[in-house]
Length: 627
Ligand SMILES: [Zn+2]
Image 1 (tube, rainbow, N blue to C red):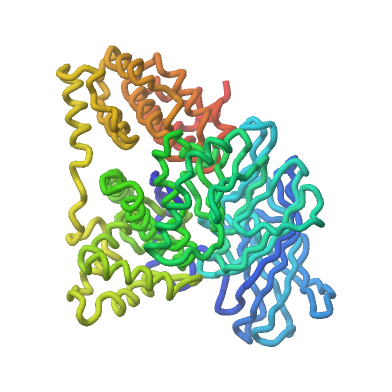
Image 2 (image 1 turned 90 degrees about the vertical axis):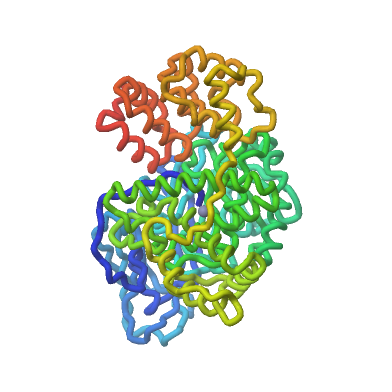
């Protein structure tokens, strides 16, 4: 996933003896393993529910085991049946525990002496989801770019359990099939291959995912969706009115995929398509296999914000092919992906652009480490986390992404790029379709990279990266100076030595625009703001990241003439990175708070539940006053 905002829970747990077991799942994969799930679900847009059945193929690992534990959240379980070899169904007893606020409800299914060890048990669970399912967002037509409603899932981190009764741990991999029924005018897509079949009724779709994946990567979207091919293996899905712009924006996709394969080995998921989401999608992107879900804010019109796509594509190796075994090991997903993203960016768009991304990412990292310290949770700046008892969505931060990136940068610097690249490729090859934890990676590293003939390296140095807080003494030099020219031009303009028309903007990339706007002080005069606004036509439209930086300056300077643009922007995007910071800035002053609440009352229906929660924390108890 691509995110940039850090949230911390104040709840700290002193569970230092974190077991090897996933602290965010009730699953006991050493007793029973769910190998496959066949979903058969109908989408009820009026009730905001999915309803139907999940048929689980379960392997008994431990001959003594008599109870299967599954993860659920807010599911209404109707019945559990065992499907016998004869095809007959036998009702099984089950219990659903009271919900834990983080983990949801444990579903326990009891077996008597039913079967031999390793027998593949078939269990059919009939159920429906809650209208409040944390994985599912149901959008009204007004929240889409056409006349139809829309629904999509977001499984990461522990939301899959709110729409499928499953072993919802990244350490458990399974294959899946699905039959999905939708209103006939809508199209369903999933993180799986579509099965084309002439016998399918209107509004009926079938999917198959043959490669084993963790439950959080099972994903669905239903809406008025159209497809355009961008090459033999790649293409883009989106609402009809967005299709032409999206196809144009991501024309580089075949080249990106080839660059990925050259660096880390074959792409093993057959197809790589993008699904460009409605504007309320809360993330930059989500790496659902075969079909990344992407924020429409990335469609800038000039292909300038494609770092998100490179990031999600890189997850095809780090995260989807080799998966962090628990959310405590999340850096194995995101640190590797951020490292690969920067390397691929360098190959595709040049060294300078890659170093800009690094410089911006490093600022986020420094902030995340300070935030962790300020929250009294300095241990959250370690690569290996201890998130037991906490919601992993709120305990993970830019540390996993950017400190992870620099740990791999440190290894690259120590062993040299050719040796490190060979190591990476071997790592993905030898662990394909497996899960990995920090201890496992450490021992693989110590045997495969730190070996005779390679530079000697103290193990303590590695351990400081993995288990220490803050940034280690061995951090490689962070690229500086990439924004010096912009900073100088900004200072000259403010000092009146450079006319606005002489600012060297003709070759600025969005990252330089953002730097220029974000570097302006809160006491910049209205005359200067008017000058910028009219000369560069700054407003709510165009490149969403540049618009955000401009509107942040509008808030910082209380520049009222642009408030209508601010409101239009906050009503037209729901991406966390783009909106939450603006509300945070608004909340810093009395007048800003009032304006923020006024805008939020109108914007709220278009925001994802996680955004609502974040904004309401910032705007306080009056946030949802609607008058
Ligand atoms: Zn990611």
